[in-house]
Amino acid sequence: MITDTIAAISTPLGEGGVSTVRISGDDAFMVAEKIFKSKNNKSLSAMAGYTAAFGAVYDGDERLDEAVALVFRAPKSYTGENTVELSVHGGIHLIRRVLRAAVTAGARVAEGGEFTKRAFLNGKMSLTEAESVMSLISAKNDRALNIATRNKQGALSKRINALTEKLLYLVSQISVFSDFPEDDTLFISEDVFKTSLTAILGELTSLIADYDKGRLITEGINTVIVGSPNAGKSTLMNLLSKTQRSIVTSIAGTTRDIVEQTAKVGDYTLLLADTAGIHQTADEVEKIGIEQALQRLETADLCLGVFDSSVDVTDDDKELINRIKDKATLLVLNKNDLQCSGNNYYETLNLPFVKISALTGEGENDLVGAIAELLKLNELDPNAEVLQGERQYNTVLRAKNAVNEALLAINGGVTLDAVGILIDDALSALLELDGKKITTEVANEVFKNFCVGK
Ligand code: GDP
Image 1 (cartoon, protein in one colour):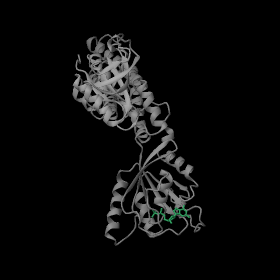
Image 2: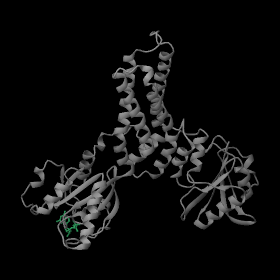
Image 3: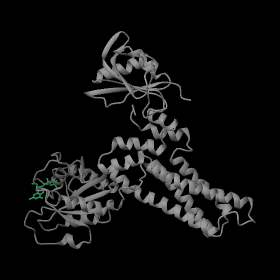
Image 4: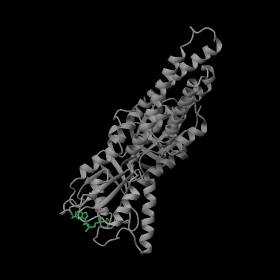
């Protein structure tokens, strides 16, 4: 069905030990043989799958480098097609020359994600498994890796398949009911139908509920650090990210722009934004910074409100608390190493808080624990199947809404055959989720965001 042969650099473009060009398609062996000569003159097309040959790679008559060619024979390859991987020394110019030679020999440069798209189209993996390949590559922490690995191994596919089977059974019952409405021995009772639909709704609801927690774990927690000038925001940012990117001084108003940093804390990744101190000011530049900080607050997953607990609370602090109290906010009572002013104002607010010293690092673990508790990240079963990406989420949401409507209709007295269309909608959504029923547009959209060479 797909006949042309594609090639791409499959390793990161940089200097390193090895770089690889992957060639896949009907003519993969022919293309590779034009540019690779093995030391013992063995032809690649005569080699068994999963075997390697040592030799050199050429562009025309020009010898580029010594190389190892790894041969995969269809269907036992990543794409399901004949594939050759040519590995040379890791140099940017060198590997580009190898790719160019492969193109001159008849291959076409692959589009982003085209190898994985072929793997999906050739039935080597389901759509959610294909999507998990990108999640594996971009995993930022162990939990994200675990989710991606389980999805790659088909955990999510299995769960979706089980739900699809249940919906298919209900659809078959509806058609029996429509054909022989007078013979109630042929189909399940309305009660059993409702129980089954309620169970499906429960499963879809739990997938939806876990999505946000999974997203925070896999994509990182969008975290905004706010607080009055000198509360210790930059010091906290530097502590968490283990760098000195934010400027720490004792001059109030030092951080005027938003400083961003990624921090791996415990099992989680925080996408930190250190903002200008929020307070009343006449300084025009500072005002812009404060405005930016407030905007960030609107879209953040987590707000760390930093307060200097060694001094008395100010009106600015109280106003800030009013702004952040309805968000997912953790009060970070900083400078706990200093003699406290004795006021416990923050602790009486009925907001989660943690006492730390950003300067000494004391309380850092408590902070991580408090974040996980606030965002309910601990509630996500490490072995749960987790939806990844908006496409998967929206598709399951469509299925859930359809099942919910079907249940409401049955409870409202609508007959089973009349809710069939809603069950069909739910079924279509789940079939689309795993790529069993998918338009070319959806497939293109999914693979468009993959990196070239994957
Ligand atoms: P920001 O304006 O909120 O970003 O505050 P900075 O991080 O620049 O800190 C202001 C001052 O407070 C600096 O002199 C820091 O060294 C100091 N500071 C920050 N955190 C702590 C802390 O936990 N304990 C003590 N003793 N000083 C701190």
